[in-house]
Length: 295
Image (cartoon, rainbow, N blue to C red; front, side):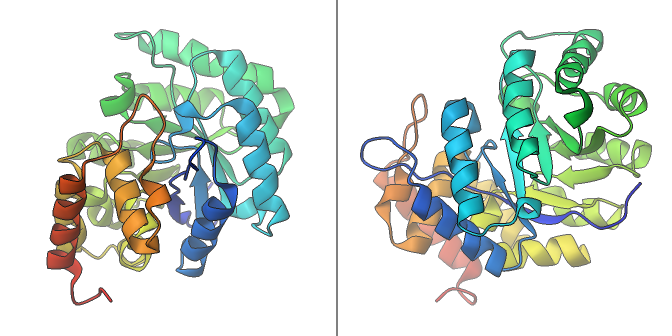
């Protein structure tokens, strides 16, 4: 099934202007910086991109702007993070119609303690609504956010029932035994490791790459982990620092520092920006780990 390694996709942060609207030009500029630095694609509207806070019409405008700006459809992955199967299919269908590379599809997350049977039926409903347009779906396991884990057996059921639709898994569980089991059971799927602390060893076991928030500000270093399976204690150490704060806001603080543009600090409710003290501590930790690369 696998023909070309997925590589590194930056989990692109979403900038907001003073009115709370998406600052599309700044978003495109960040995407182009990431691609120029070696990312093979950009993932729009994922967790780091606050995708659950971005509406359908906004998404359509952003995707159109990216394509108009010369970002190739094959360089775009679109996250879909909604609960209603109809809404998920609508958002996915629009992106797929524009030729994007993949859809990153999270499970519904309002109801907790749901069964594998229920989740299987939900994904099946999305794919049924999509019909013949359904393709290149990466299912998204991020139970720390959704509180709805995707089991290895459920992924196996989806893979068997929809072999030409479900082509990969992004595992952001942060649970290495689960990631290892997933790689062993479904190594012919595109398995993407979302936790950079486990990325290199995941690649060494056959992982196909990553959709990475860290790639917003250290893309070259993350790329080496993806391409060579090379451990980088600096990356692992800085993930630990990020996890001391709400991660999306922390990533955006680092992008603000990278770009010298405080607009990137803004997040949409219900998220809030991290404090000035938090920004300072992150900067100090980053410089301590990466000072030889900084400048």
